[in-house]
Length: 174
Image (cartoon, helix red, strand yellow):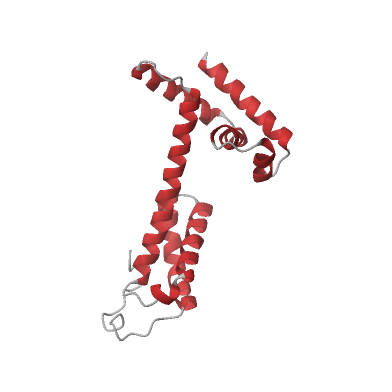
């Protein structure tokens, strides 16, 4: 990814005798390019900003070692892309868990494909708040009080959202 929006330094500058730059200078030089690359990957400004901040924080914590690497920018991009991949893996695993909770086991695999397709359609029809409440309580096992704190609402609101989501799932599956 080097050279995403700036010239690649000459080999003489990046040689073993080069003095490591400060983290602040590194951040100023690379944060715009990293954000641009992450935005292209995520298509979401907020997710790109979060990933960028997480990657820079990890490098800042290890700057005494990372700053002396031959290519700290490559390490930065690798760190950011690993965080992106890990986030998507967690999301995919969470989606699979939700599907396993809803789809009965021991049925014909073709019927399960149809059921999963139907569940995907149902989940996309839920409001974001209903999906979040359902995932937090049913999939991740949080109490309604904890889920309410996470979403900034009262526990009773979480119970209502989960109830509405369950009703929508039942209505769609009949």
